[in-house]
Image (cartoon, rainbow, N blue to C red; front, side):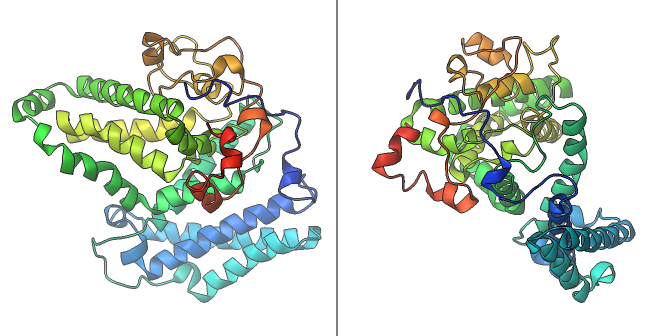
Length: 391
């Protein structure tokens, strides 16, 4: 391994919220209402902008399925909620920034047409940025995981707006906003460089298999490839620089999995897609695999206490993947699989005791600078004096 000591325990007692704001964040101080106002204001303003520039900011595959009357009604509720929550925050909080941000975004959205905004521009299939995809994902994941993590939390003391949440939200935004770019960078290398490896007889045989068999094969082949790519990112010092970004998260929740350097994400996904492309699996099997990936890759980072004991030897679970992020020495470079924990059992890297990790993070409690762009350039311009953090 690159360094068996590269990940050590971060202090579990270190205060989290005070590192991002010196003002109270508990209920009744206007911080929660301010954050919600700012987020809802952003969602509302983003939705209105999507109506104005659908040809640039929305996904062609989704446009024809939008129930516009319901979307307009929901948009109206979002804007009203943002304004009211922002007003509450302004009244309760000494620092008015969050509340004013939400109110300002709401007013801008209203000036641009609000819930009654007309659809401008032509519906083309050209290059686009998936702002609508980001907004839908943000609302859907938040509505699903925030209640789950409050009701079934393994670490109930962990707040929703914990240390580093802004950074992870930015990662989530970039990934979904640039969905066309990331999809292209994931699939194009395989199509360009490995088209010669596709054999029609093999493809015909594969597509003739039952759907369930195809799905199981896609899951096994992709995760087997991803296992070794993931292991390489831990083993090779240069690659670890990029993957350390993912491991810099000191808490686990549904959005922590979004903290992934673009080099890491594209390399892993593009490499994983190669055998899938060469084998020539059918469309339904690939779609089912994509849905599985989206659900499981998010769920295994979630702050939930479910252990799934009967199947955890086979399927990657939150406890299994939490130990991969653990700073405990015995958990270093373990549990590389994302979907099938069985692969780690086969190659001797499985670790899942009857307990949950108590701390996560990088060596000695050290931290990377927060912020998407700071973390993006950090592996590229790592100073000699700081290399011990990542190698």
